[in-house]
Image (cartoon, rainbow, N blue to C red; front, side, top):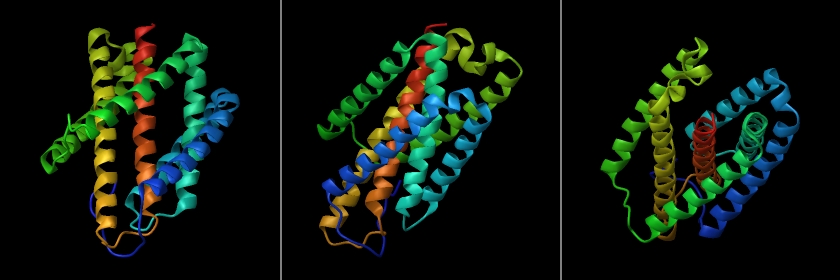
Length: 233
């Protein structure tokens, strides 16, 4: 997510960011349909989609001038992964769990947006640094949990499947992912302000902003889906 602006491109408006985000979501939904109907039954292809989506996501994050086609490829592949994962959860716990996760994601989006716009929460350079530390710590816990899951800990869920500890980790995941949305809103606001002041921006920065928002929403959805799954065990 771009938190600073640099040298080369065009004026960016709210409409630009909204349109690009919508296009990415269309690609995401198209991929989700494929994932739901095909990848969920083919773990090997699902794994390939995971690696392709991760590769595209890392590439987009590191690029100064974003390539729209790469963002769209990320959207399709990430959508395929979501479709496959969602199908597994629906098969295991019932279709309602997916609907509840989607609703929960929408609620998180609306609530965090309102809180940001009304200044109930503020993003500062200090809070960004704290978020980064928390994010790295949570990722490390997730990695260790994954290794533990391979040895059957938590019934295959790793630390997330260990009673109250698992629920607390899931709640922490939802909170961290939701704060990521607030960071995105602030990043978008900063870039739009810089654009209005005539500062030079990286090419296709609106695509990158839409990408960042999509990543956070996907993260929120997955965290809520896991929390609901564990709650229904």
